[in-house]
Image (tube, rainbow, N blue to C red; front, side, top):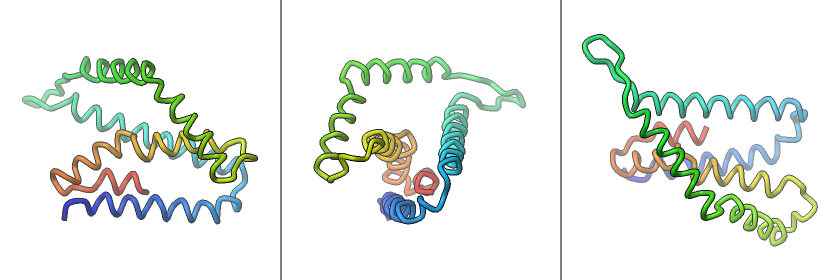
Length: 148
């Protein structure tokens, strides 16, 4: 069924947020920082593996590379567009507005957490590629991994 991966991903994110809200205080700050770093490194390795999969292939028993310039151009063009439209500032402004509306004015990390969560959960590469794979091919591994 088309969209089941997106539904499972949404449920996983909401469940993880609820669990994290109630259990986050059980971990010391150093442990939370270590877990964040471990998750960040995992995401980097997954991204690198995905990029390498598109860049490397085996031809007659030899590893052949290609499309590396495409990766560089995509990163450069994406960065330029993001800077020109001020996407980070827009997220920060929306985070400040949301902070006031939700009554979290005293939380100094609210905006940073909101921006990080929004960028990784909503517009991260795994979210976009995963949603496309879900819609076109009914394949869910990226969304399952992202939800985890």
